[in-house]
Length: 359
Image 1 (tube, helix red, strand yellow):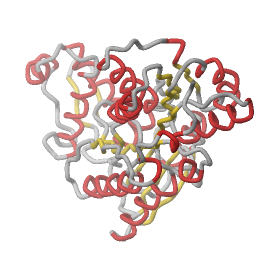
Image 2 (cartoon, rainbow, N blue to C red):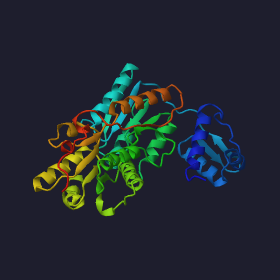
Image 3 (cartoon, helix red, strand yellow):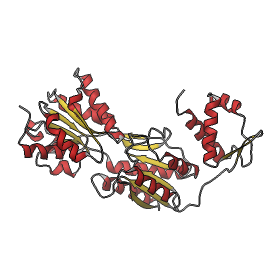
Image 4 (spheres, rainbow, N blue to C red):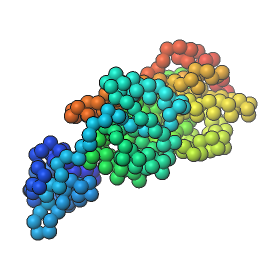
């Protein structure tokens, strides 16, 4: 049985309460009956009921049973949607936000923008404020999505208030039922590494971000491509960094990481450019690079490198569409969007466009 079974059962009961299957003041079936209906244990039922008690939807009465406390906690419609990302004006975010804002405005909704700077304390501050603001829903890029998140209770409060949430770029493992829109990062990691393998490279290193789930999935794809090629995944050829230590950690680790390697998969274009600048300053050979996001960094780099294109504006547009559908009472499902290889000079098959190969 899944460890998240109680969350699934709580979600089912929450929907039944909000849809009127169970009315205010009505007694729920007993634990044994609910367990038999859901195909789970009584302990799972108790956990689900405890969660809905915390949300204010249910109340247990000693010796009597569990009763519906309220059937609807939806607030008045405001036509405001909160959009929370780690950053706003940097890197790929303007394109994502453009897709969100355009879709919302076309449907006569206004967007309220907030940034967490990829800090869980800032995320908690923003979410706490938003619970008091007049909004209809939330589009959010989670903070440090590869780590256990201390703010899950706040996301549960949005759910109990009837405020739909759509995640972009990543999602927390603690919210298995969440709706999200993001790029297929595992397949992207496999594609990036395969591009280097197709050029005859065999000693391929990788740099990945450890505190966001995108980094883990890109690493999974990178290691999958190596295994499928019959090559080992060598720990000494993989470096991990976090939001806070990227510059200093990579500055210290890049020279040893790429020594003897002919290829390198970078977490994103920012990392790729840092690698190129460091090796240029040191006068060291540059391995062929494959990266992600096809951002301005890759397009203006004096040393061209392959960068897979992220459907940035499409992620924003689709996330907004899903949220609007949820506001209309429709069920929505997660979406994974494919990475693509853009046309242009970075796609040429000539080695010279990739930088200087390791000798």
